[in-house]
Length: 220
Ligand code: CA
Image (cartoon, rainbow, N blue to C red; front, side):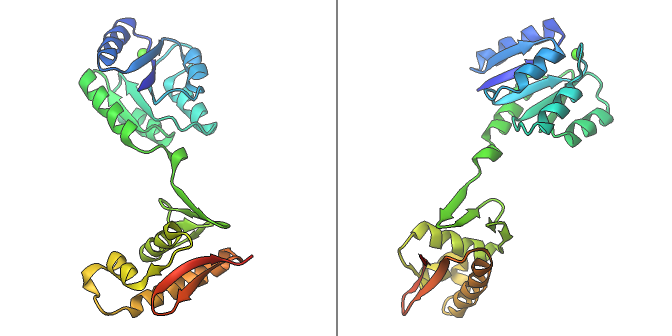
């Protein structure tokens, strides 16, 4: 993990950097707000740790500019004033976390690790089939929202590619044991999904494979 640490109290910065490095975290440190902003725009950091009170430019100003430019690097704000307004302002401007000074370095490390385990938004998982783009996290296909069950079914169909997904398999995975033989649930949800797909794609259809199940097909 590599972090940018913007902090003007040199003794504190030295102590914290030393402890972070012992945990295998690379630290680029600067004590200056303007330099902090310049570095924060680089796409090389896993996290930015930003003090609020800084010379030349405050941590909140840096945060605001960085987020307005669409930079999504996780940011933890630090503040000597444990004032609630700072915290609220920071979170409103797009900070991911907030730590009041004085803090224990172990606490900072725990939060860095927690943020680093979160999948970054830019890597969000999109499944594609022909002209369909299915966003698993948002549960949308080409921008149209799906219900939870519709989304699960579409995911199976896309992952199967040109292979047929058996109706029993869909029933078992989406409804589990609760529905057993009530397999017309699958048909009902397939018909919902067909309507939604028809509204976003002229090419992709869900084909019924008689006596077996369903598969996606692309009409050329
Ligand atoms: Ca400061």
